[in-house]
Length: 311
Image (cartoon, rainbow, N blue to C red):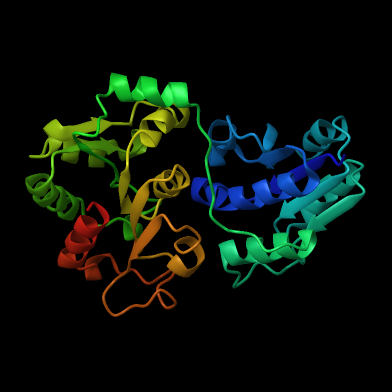
């Protein structure tokens, strides 16, 4: 039985979630759980905690070249699957005594479609056709406890809402979101869970102090691990293209993601759970980094699409 290491260079939570389907494909192919080496910023240890296809998550220290080799070497892997064109990661794998090292072609990152590049890489190595739909596993008992604690029931429309993003050009105006949920709440009895961290407190405060604040619960003082069973108890996500949106899609929530300065062709079409909104005048193919179209996202389009998703 092969013992495999999956190495992920990407720093983002969304990137990790997109790669989960590839991790599962490798595990099924070798008929054994894999070990994942990933940066702490991906929250892989929390997100993959209950994943039956993952035996362990090891933190990838960007500066700890020799330390990383030592952590890998003692585990005696047969294979590595490197989701990166990094020579450094290849050398870490090779110097750790791993004989079979699969990796992206060196210096090939530029212009790559993130999810398609990973899918093609996995399919070619394993000689399979894979479904890119990612799934996050979570403990049912924890989900039921979260539902009781936060009164998540079928009597309410339970929505995770992320007003944050990795930068201001990727955030739809917070006043638009407040107006959006004012209209949605008139149509449906809702409970809103605001997904964001300490750095997003200024946005969370705006929401909590608004007319919809009384319907909201904030995640700002929770860890990712604490939020996951709550999210798993909800049915919907509405917000920007963020790691939160990808987590929600991975937990099987119907998820509406607004893309205004990032490419939906690479991050929005891998999952059947994701519905994409783009700026007026753009297409899924044309919208990308430096589109800067947050002021061209039609309010009526978001409202009508949201109500359709929440039907």
